[in-house]
Image 1 (spheres, helix red, strand yellow):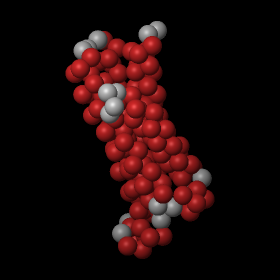
Image 2 (cartoon, one colour; image 1 turned 90 degrees about the vertical axis):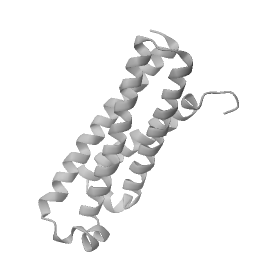
Image 3 (cartoon, one colour; image 1 turned 45 degrees about the vertical axis):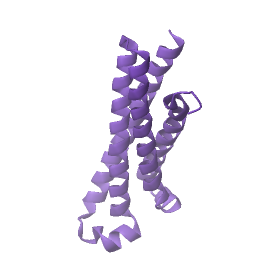
Length: 150
């Protein structure tokens, strides 16, 4: 894009969206009143964050082919892959948790599910949110180290 690699242009967007989705998911699980407030926006945010993170990861792989490899770039790439996977897992669990706990989801899909399913999906989604924060933080740290040294 205008002679600039796309990865550095998208990376901060992906970081912010993924961290927002993870934080919102934790709020939804820990404080149920946020479920009503965020509604369908929570799973939508998680899905958009996962897509942007995965697209950013793909452009990172393309950039790596043009700049060559080093140990820190290999580590950054590995954390980028983990971040993409964490984003996808968070998105899937966020959607499932929303289906299990929202009035719309319960009336159409989850009405016959046992009550513990919503709780279990909430716990799994919270764990996925924490893992997404860890992965994006370490991907960002190794990426910054590869650019700025240190």
